[in-house]
Length: 251
Image (tube, rainbow, N blue to C red; front, side):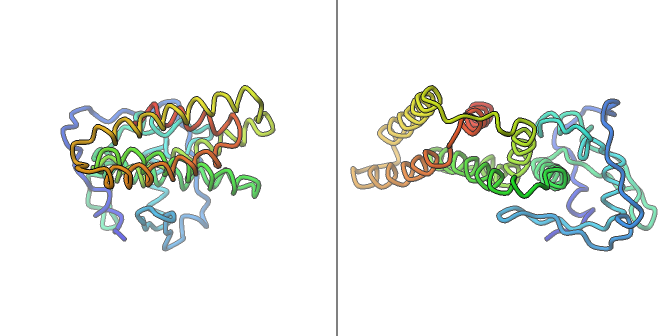
């Protein structure tokens, strides 16, 4: 658990662009009662945890309106249009450099984005789709993290997945009842899973770090278990479209 300015006052590594205001962003204002809340904890099942006061969150949404827009953008677009950093006063009035420009800063931006968007996606019918999407995205992340022996990108994705999933929930809510389990969908799903299976088998078979058949078999089985789970989770053409876009854009 990290404090507000210790968490966000991170210098943007290699970032030389000036902060840009997004003229099209319109954030949702906090009510007076929300501003007075002394402790707001933001975190999800496997994510980092952020702690703010109501006034601190108000300050963030006032200065980074893309975090909480009336019509949310895709998380990557929202982050790109955020401006990345501002100089903001802390509780003592001293100016602090508050930035989302580092890798950790981007994680924090995505967690905040997911927090605000989840407050719009409040219908109980969205609980199961949200859980399904988070599982799907995590499965893809684990598969590629395993194939690449981990790395910082995959660790950061654990936090960012909540924003990607919440935006997908938002899209699901807008398009509900338009999804189908058809013969064409099943053919496309089979083709997608076969392509992913082929990638797994080929990469494991040629992995120079796996020195014997037993190691290769163990690695294959571990990864194919996630593929089996994906087969169960991808139940209609919405989930298929989302997982394809997520994988091809990021992995």
